[in-house]
Length: 193
Image 1 (cartoon, rainbow, N blue to C red):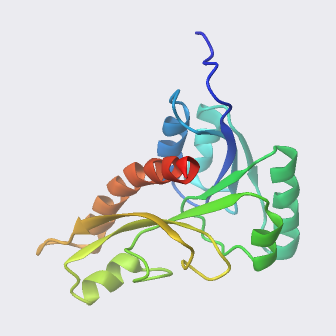
Image 2 (cartoon, rainbow, N blue to C red):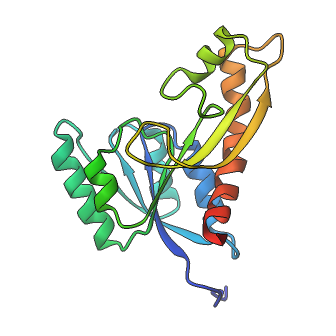
């Protein structure tokens, strides 16, 4: 197979805590010739995160950091990112909040995908909250990360209709399908600006 001699891809890390379904879709996206990114590192705070298996499957270096001492964990992560020359972090179901110092000391872009139409429903239990409030729509948002929770500049959003027979589980599934499409589009948008 001939390696494409296109523009050099932006070295990226994906942070996960769980199943890694967004990680998998980002890896598939990164393999496309016209993708602006390569995924060079997977980071997790959870040694049991199912998504870590994608490191093995796709031969991507993976590291698990113990978050019992957040400051120490973040220092180690920053030095790992520097070693690998990472310029983009994609948070994909990473359940730890990055400190202001971490955000400041990382000299690149940090993106997050959130399962609601921000600024509505920041934080956790987004589907449950949207349904309890009888919203007609929910969805997902990709945004830049700043030091306030789920408050960074919005890059892209995708709306999902909440049907009459919706359950939290069915809504979560619908939104996740859209997340897998939205994240790559948002990354393209960020790097074409």
